[in-house]
Length: 191
Image (cartoon, rainbow, N blue to C red; front, top):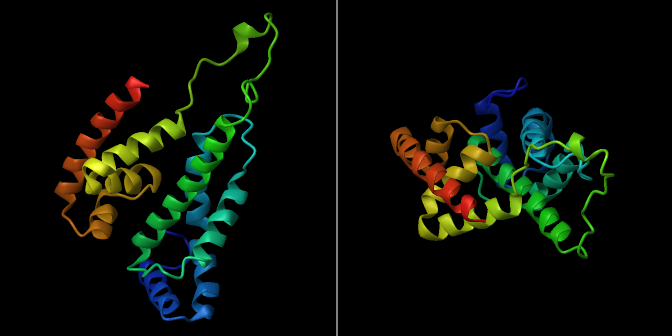
């Protein structure tokens, strides 16, 4: 997860300065991380249904606003920043998905003619709400495994970056990641 502009040390230094209340650090930080935030948002949006109302840039902007408002977070490093960013984007999309499900029955249905029925794609998009619910259940059972899924799947962090954020070994991350993937697949098959 390297950005083209600025290195990990620059980003970490600016995050720590922001922790200390340096507003200029935030202004310097955002151009350095913008490309990576867009990559994360694109990753999320690729899993959404076609015609989703929220666009990648809007998701980045909403996450940015929430990040600025997250003065309570004590940033550790670059990986921690992107993990929190990914978590915020996930929450934004899950909130939208939950709101969409609350629409009046059939409000989200796409109407097609019988002639066009054969042209409807058969690819199923993952149910973000079901995945979020399953992830909450996993986190309640084993918080670290839930965090690993969030960081790896939603945040796009590498095994090493995930290990750094959670302060565990890479082997622990790989073992927990393997278990969590199997567990989540079984849970999602139940829905």
